[in-house]
Structures are given as C-alpha cells and as structure tokens.
Image 1 (tube, rainbow over the protein chains, first blue to last red):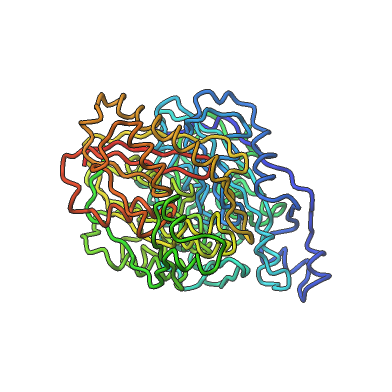
Image 2: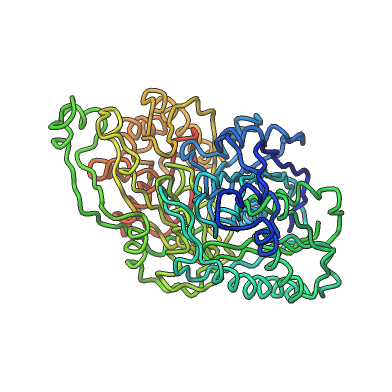
Length: 297
Length: 297
C-alpha cells in the first residue's frame, strides 16, 4: 500500500540573503561558503510559524473532502498550543474529525510524517503533510560554522493512499551531542561528525530499500535527499551509483531548511515526478536519524 | 487489530506542592481549589525533560527485542534536538531501526500516540509510548486561574500489537485562543470555554465509539479520562451513564499533567486493568482536540 502525491506547495519567503551578507558580517567568504556547502542564497521571514502555516496551506486547491490526517513536521516552532496542524485544519476548513498533530524529528520529520500517513490512511483517503521551520529563531548569526547553513522554509504535500509500492527504513543512532538544540539556546553542530554519519548511513539505508524491492540503480527514476550539503548529496549518489540527473536539488537557493527541504524540492519539481516512477527519498539529521522511503509515484 | 499494555511506569518527582502553597502566595484558598478542581497536590521537578525521559525509561524491564517504535508526547519540552524519543532509545539500548519521534497534541498527545502505534506496528511487534511534560517551565505562578491546575509528570507504556478490538475517534475544533502557549510566554486559558468544550465533545466522541462497537455503558469495564478537572470527569461519566467506580482518577494527587495524565493513571492502576476488559480512554485539550480510544485489553 502506498501514497500518491496529489498536490505540493512551497511558501515564498520575503527576505533573501546571499553569501555576501555573511561575508560582510563574519570571518568567512562568499566563495568559501559556496565551495564547502553548495549554498548561494537562503530565505528568512518575519512571519511566525503560525502565520507561515496559514499562508502555506491557503495555497492548496485540492479537494479535501476525504482528508483524515494533518501532520506538521517542525523542530523550530515557537507555537506550542494549539498545534500548527490544528491551525492548518481550521485555515483550510477541513472536516473536524481530521487527526491533527505536530511532530519533531528534526530534518527527518517530513519523511517520518509520510510514513505515518501511509500507515494511518485507508485506501482513497488523504492527508496534508507539511513542514514549517523558522530556524532563524534558533540560529547564532555570529557563528560562521552554522549561520551560513540554514534558512527558514515551509512546504507540504497532499497525499492519497493507494496500493502502489511504498517501503521505508528508519534508523536512530547515538547522538553524542552532535546536533543539538535546547530552548533558549542556539543550534550547535559538530559538522564533521554529521557529515561522516550522513555519507555512511544514508546510502546504507537506501541500499536496504533497493535490495528489499529488488531494484537496481538504473531502475530508480528520481531521488530526493535532504538538502544539507552538496558534498553529502554527491557522495550518496556516487555510493548508490545513481546518476546525478535523477537527483533534484535546490540547496543552492534555499540552504538547509530542515524538515522543509524535501517538500520544497517536491513542490518545485512536481510536474517532473511522473506516475509510475520509482522515487527514493531520505531525510537525515539530529538524533542522529535517517528516515528513507522507496515509493512508486 | 489492537494493542496490549505490556508494562507501564510512572516517574516519581521530588517537589510536592499542596494547595496551601498557593493559598500562601495567591489570592485563593486551599478549599476553593479543591472544591473547584478536585486537586489537592501536584508535583514539580528540577529535572529537565531529557533527564526525566532517561529516569522514566530506565524503569521499564520488559523485553524490547521486538520494539519498532518510540513516541514521546510533550508540549512542554525545551529539548528540541535530539528528540526525547531518540534519547529514550539510546537510554534503553533498543535496536537502531526503531522509529523515534516526538509529537505534540497537548493533553491529547498520549492517546494520539497510541493510535499511531496501533497503525504503525505489525502483529507481535512493540512500541514504547510515553509522555514527558515539564509544564512548570510554562506556568505563570502569579496567575491564580492557571497556576493551581498543572503539575509536571512523565509516564508511559510498552504496548504490543495484537488482533483485539481497537477503535478511535478524533476531533479538532476551532481554537479561538481558548488554550494557548507561545514560546517565551506562559499558558493562557479561558477555563469556561474549555469546560464547555470538554463536557460537550468528550461524551459525543465516546458515545460514537460505543455505538460503533455496539457496546452499552454496562459493557464498559474501565474508563480513563484526561485528568483536568473532576467536574469534567463527573459530567462525562454521568452523561455516558458509566458508573464512577469504573473510572480511574488521580487528579487529586497529580493535578493536570497534560499528555502524562492518562499514562500516570495506567501505571498506577496497571494490575487492575484485566485481560479482555473493555477500556475507554479520552484525551482532550488545546486544539481544541479530542482523541478517544475504545479497546479490548
């Protein structure tokens, strides 16, 4: 039993920052940032996560009569009650019997929410799955090792349960303070450890799914990896022997928007993901966690 | 397909406050608090939610070989990365393939997590579902309308998927600022609106489940309602025509611990919930949300 993407939307944010912005303020250079991360610009917003949620979900035009579930993935929302998912339900005027919940699995949150939707829904029923991250609230803009990496972002999909292929793999490793956030503080990260974790564990997880479904690299049509660093993305693709042109990426424009990276990529490439294609996805980050999906679109 | 409670644990907290504590500090009286709410004492802690999680999950002794899922329900954790669920996994040494995620649906979070577990697990597989609330971090101790109501708390269950009866009903209504929390502020609540919502919507939700399973009030063996106010609990029982002695309650001792109230009740009454008994549960609160379950134990 699987999921079909019915519609996908990204929220445009108003403040665009290029690498020069950081070069002017920190001991770093525009070139260095681009060469080390692949990031050229990122967006920030003055909106809070409640306002972002309302603006995002108003963009969806699909029929929501069969909607049974709304999940918002976020590690960075300051809105704790009511949940962003229940604000989304009210905004789109969905049925009151929709189960609304917010989840936090950091950068792997959107993939995890898709897995929950696939388990929760009955055939023909729908879910609205979105991510809403205002990471700028938790960034230290004086720390050149993290300030350059992140952006705010919100995007989502409406999915419908069908009978196509959908398998997943999840992993949660020891955290050892590798990627941390405690309320009132800012994000801290040991970049090298996160890099090593990602280039080792993400290919393992995706190979397991390809093995389980008996699919070879050339039978994978599209791949969407969490947009954290282009060197991680390239390493994973090379390890999997999957052609670069099957991989969607917009890290250069948006930076790392945590749970929002995968749905932003989906929204921007929605027309290019065709019915029947085999899509690989993998979210990974704090936990340390990997949440991967192999699905027929 | 249903769930069996394998084990349940509550975390003892170190700071006990009776109503006199508030009488001495606020324009209120010990008697008034008890008469209006049913609460006599509540517990607070100096531990943070990460420490609470570690202490709680170390209490579980069950075999965790078949564990596939860990969910922590919390609206009040300051730990944003890594998730409390991944900290729990590391603490108990569970398999790295366990899906770990934190959810926030306020007071209905534990019931929602049970529903997700029932959908996620395959037969014979297990989940650790717990709530961890440090509400004292978000209370205004000078506001007599909210300070007297809440307590900190952490408790959970290990469940195993089986083939018994398990049905659920969820509702998410308009919020209209009835029960709010934004980071950096404290909980605000319009008590009368929450009361009216609860006494109307909770019985409707539970009657729907009884109707769907064709069970009459005298066929319900046990009922556990979210512990917010004894007048809500009594009104719901009366409306449902379910005997008070079938209802477990410990509101007098713990106050409202949000998502933790239902698992604390389960942990304290674990031996009294017998195999084959029909159990009703309902969590309700901010959203405004109701999440109800009817299950055969």
